[in-house]
Image (spheres, rainbow, N blue to C red):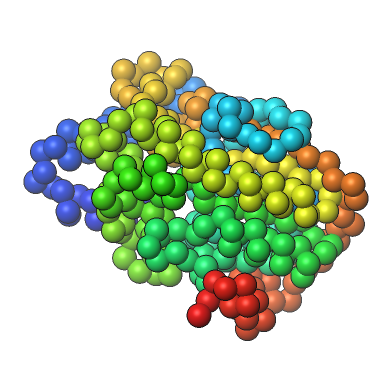
Length: 324
């Protein structure tokens, strides 16, 4: 919850006792106690993803290591790594916030890339702009696959980052969608990226969980379903992209655990910043070696920035059926 979101929620719920008990007070404890504790404790630096050996980096947003290990269907060498962030903003800032990455094209369903970074890549393909699902307030994985394959074809001498939303909420599977009459998607991030008021249309899953509207077990099952939905699309990219592919995540989630090693007896949910509990920063690192490595060239792009607004890219998305 960033400052603008906090202010919006305070205006909306300032006289709601249940909100203060279930959301407001836990937030205050986190910011006043838990985050300072982790700052005092210090933390592992985490893996610098850009320095690792890969041609394709497939990011599954908010995917815990233990969840991935249980449900993964993609063959490869799996290990665990420590992420540099406990939420997407920290991951992006600590991996790509300094310097230029002229050998990287970043394909993203998550608008946070556009919000938090000043286009440090050779190109950014913002799939969320043209392949947004208005019913679910997210980008579905099939759109990401097509955009990623298109980017690999357009930039054959660049490393490709493909940043999916799933398994991050909203829940797009049959079970997950039946849990809620309404659920927040990632529309807040989209509005931040487009300069609109930073607000969600509905409560997100963590707020609903803290309010007792759904159970931890159901939320876990819905998240696992989201992961199972995205994995076949990950497999398609692994099969069709050349080079070495790494499947990983920017961060995990807390689903009612205590933020160990912090001794505060407070169950926590979601992926708050500055909380470096194991469930938040332990992420999968699945390596799949392709038959042919890509020859990568780092070269400055005179039109560096957000390339998916170009007429050519928009027309390709229209041909793929994502635009009318």
